[in-house]
Amino acid sequence: MLRIECPCCGPRDHDEFRYGGDASVIRPVHDDPDPEAWYRYVYVRKNPAGLHREFWQHVMGCRQWLVVERDTRSHAIASVSFARKSPA
Amino acid sequence: MARYSAFSILRNALSGQRYWQRAWRAAEPKPAYDVVVIGGGGHGLATAFHLAENHGIRNVAVLEKGYVGGGNVGRNTTVIRSNYLLDGNTQFYEFSMKLWEGMSQALNFNVMFSQRGQLVTAHSADQLDSFSHRANIMRLNGIDADILDRDDVRRLTPYLDFSDTARFPIHGAIFQGRAGTARHDAVAWGYARAADAHGVDIIQNCEVTGFVRDGEKIVGVETTTGRIGAGKVGLAVAGHTSVLGAKAGLELPIESHVLQAFVTEPLKPLVDHVVAYGADHFYVSQSDKGGLVFGGNLDGYNSYAQRGNLGVVREAAEAAIALMPCISRVRLLRHWGGVMDMTPDASPIICPTPVEGLYLNGGWCYGGFKATPASGWCFAHTLATGEPHPLIAAYGLDRFRTGHTLDEAGAGPSAWLQ
Ligand SMILES: Cc1cc2nc3c(=O)[nH]c(=O)nc-3n(C[C@H](O)[C@H](O)[C@H](O)COP(=O)(O)OP(=O)(O)OC[C@H]3O[C@@H](n4cnc5c(N)ncnc54)[C@H](O)[C@@H]3O)c2cc1C
Ligand SMILES: [Zn+2]
Image: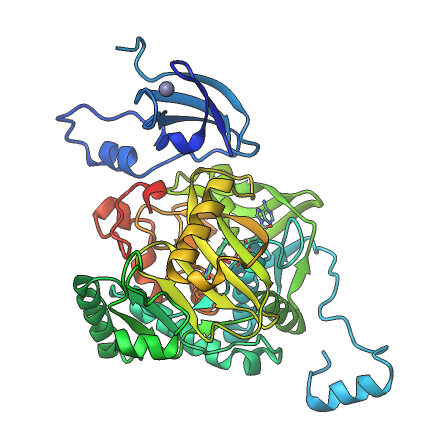
């Protein structure tokens, strides 16, 4: 089990969250015509064995999207922050 | 290699079991091989065997960082079936099924392939319709498939929930009689022994840590026991494809996730088939020792931890009881996890790569055990000839770029949603 320290609600079981995948992937701009950029955005992942920056949404709590830095080998969480700089 | 037979069992019994030969040699690595296969799981070993058996390439090494059978080949729930829908999948998995049917003979090793039949329950008229579509496609491809109505299902599996209070009432099922299970460790050992008998070196406790290049071309591997040269390198490392792929400069559409399996205390014979629950991700079969073996969902976040989480244990138990209320008091003995490559379309990637000298066999998602013999057969062909075998033409890396994904699960590009 993971315990995620939600900056809004405090430490919670990860069952309260929805996983949102790799947070380091950057969406190409809306009208980017380069198929390669879209291919990379949709499909390619670094998938590191180690520190991973990833999205989690606290669906059963404050509903904020968070960025969690987690070691994929040990599940140790290095940091949690709001995905948007300031919470609404 | 001494062959196994009724006679050899008798002779060894009469001599106190003292003179059995070891199943394969503890090989020392040579400086170089024609082909180096990374990963001593089912796929790597099957590849090495078929390189020797089908193509006469015997100067081959299989490098395994742990021990043979310690990876997913020894962690899966052993279900073998060929009830696929999409062109590319249907033919490949049926070819695999045919190889399973002859495997114990081909390897001279009893892999305990048991064609007990698999049924997937349908829980709405629509679901049964979609199963009929699948069954028709299977039959058009010469694969056995039957559609069962509720009464048929009840006759075969009376222990499922047919009560008025069932959470999702059973409407019928799709049934494949030739599907079943095999002893997974025996598959690894059988291939290891048969490959070794052809002269393949199986080197355990040898982790590949990097690649040796001559210009752009890969000409060998760095390992924890030193450098080994290779004419060609085949990567078959199950959940660790991204880690090694990155070392060769490959960027892949793969995420590693943990899948768990469970086994209960032994029971009297109860479940004759493999039963998959059409309303949730849950399936069950009974092992020869009597334990119910079952599997459930992915943990759903990137992981190399090779252990699961309790939330999934609870989900699997809930699904088990919804389908089979009679096992609600049965104790769970063990659960474990395996690290798997999840691809965005839930189909494997097995092909030559853009890196010269490097060939890829990965992305098997939940279902690569059943693929083991066909994967080995086709990957050996690809390594030997440099060209993908026709049966794996749909499994190329380029399909994501060109839009030819093979999305059997219909789950889209997010591995964690599968
Ligand atoms: C819980 C669970 C249930 C499953 N159930 C089923 C099922 O019912 N039916 C089905 O068809 N499939 C199932 N699967 C999937 C199936 O087990 C896998 O797809 C398949 O076994 C993967 O291929 P493999 O056997 O070669 O992998 P593995 O046995 O994992 O082989 C890969 C090997 O590579 C080695 N390796 C990794 N990195 C290195 C390195 N750097 N150097 C050297 N060696 C390395 C590993 O140690 C490992 O032994 C299941 C998987 C899991 C985890
Ligand atoms: Zn919160």
